[in-house]
Length: 78
Image 1: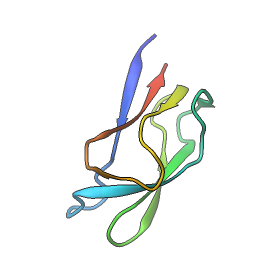
Image 2: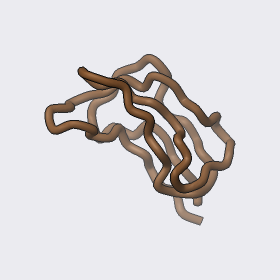
Image 3: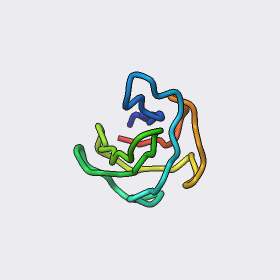
Image 4: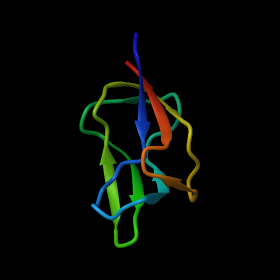
């Protein structure tokens, strides 16, 4: 078993932070590669972010909060 940390992605060259708009998967649920798991709002638009891993998700970040690019927002145990 391995634990993968998901971080606030840098979705644009000028992006320094993003707001976690919505979790589409709850803590404890299984996710698969390519599944949309959350949405992030930057200065200009909202992005849906897909999982790069398969496993069980644990949320760290809260909806509606703003996080710096690279800040941990969730973990997936593979």
